Length: 252
Length: 148
Image (cartoon, rainbow over all chains, first blue to last red; front, side):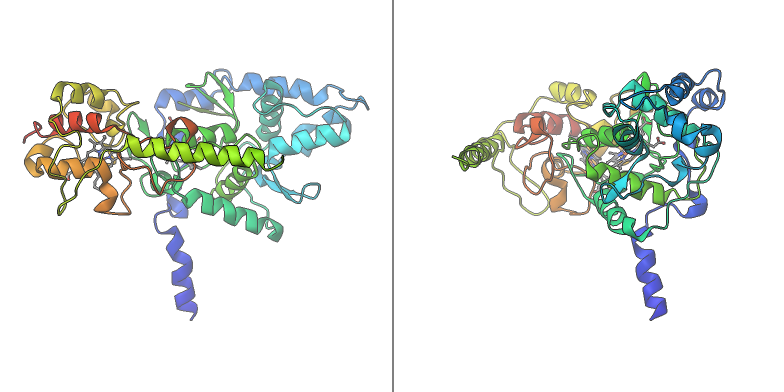
């Protein structure tokens, strides 16, 4: 019985890279791009991190509070936080990602209107907070309330979508390391978000990346902030558990 | 009053369906081939080559390599198209481009001339096949010339 169970549990992972074989997207990059990410002086995303540090200390909203008013020194209070997001939010009864958490704080604690998705302010604050966990292992929370949402993310990952009728797994589990046109297919580990993408000439979120992949298979992408995108993020972070956070990354 | 938007929606969906059917050419599969051209006439290999090179329209070179473009921008997810004209007949090539899933439901190769069984297709592509019947014939005309 135990043997059968072990077999059944092993099956869904058949195409997925074994833990020892897991590789960050940065492992597939050209040496110049890797060097750009590794050197803070040439990593363009560090400008967003610097902006985020300023926002951290800027009082805003009706109560005139800054993030620092409640959380103090981010280099201490925010260390390790990004590594365990998305996390369960009592307020909504759902998982929330790091940007979503920042906007919840704005709405309820500052209080101030939430930043727009992909706005410079939101990306900068998210990058600054996530930067405090750089080098730390991704540590998905062992919160059973997250399980159904993670399972839904996994189902979305396996689902064929779009005019091209492809699933995430078809490329990222079964064919990573191969060439799709001129690009190498990475394993889709979300280790470095928000990150600077040369193609975007900007910093973007993990949700932006996921929407790009959906558009690539000619599917209707989910709207920024949609529960489906957060569930996918939750699933991907679980799949990348133990890998080192690289935020802010650089990608081609 | 409240029902109205739904009635309108049903109408739009209904019309899309009718339009979509027009977008597909009828064809007959015999064995693992479609012997007759979808358009009733042979395609043009020159136009087929231009289509293959325009990867936003034909997508073939995202997955395949072929003796037609710079090698570093070609895919490695599928067999090379060089020599395909020696390996397969014209009719076999046509079926594989039209609907590879008839031969292998698990394949990653998109069905280029089929609109059913798809989920969350983006609005501009909804009810439209990846390639028109004429485009498929142009690509078939090119591929049969790719001999070993």
